[in-house]
Image 1 (cartoon, rainbow, N blue to C red):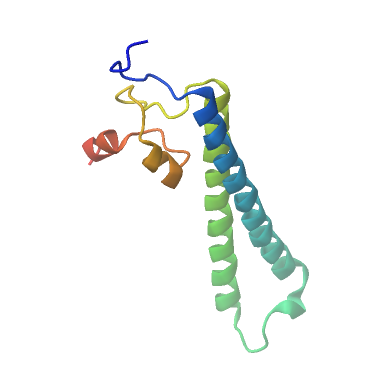
Image 2: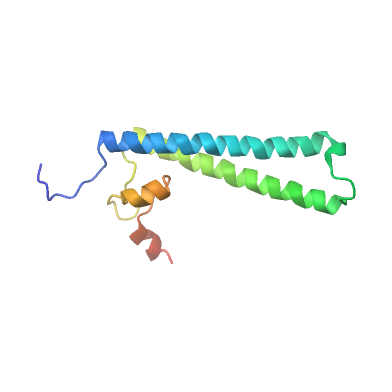
Length: 124
């Protein structure tokens, strides 16, 4: 293979490295989601758990905040799971706009990225 030819996909070894990174992030994300859901459940199940003197408005706001955080975490988990599918299909790290490889630096920072920096900047 010509060394100057542009790579069209990451090697199996590179994909394995990204898979490990994503699985670690997925485990942390699931723990965080469980924490939010446990907090929501605790608030719902135990009316005495509310701090005395807090009115219902504050507890409702906290409930909404936890629900929002849990929703974002679910979405993040879905993005990470989708990235694992792309690794399995050996298309991980390919920009869906340019068709070129997304930089390793970007993928390490945002492992579920589907756009290169160039494509992301074109969106704005």
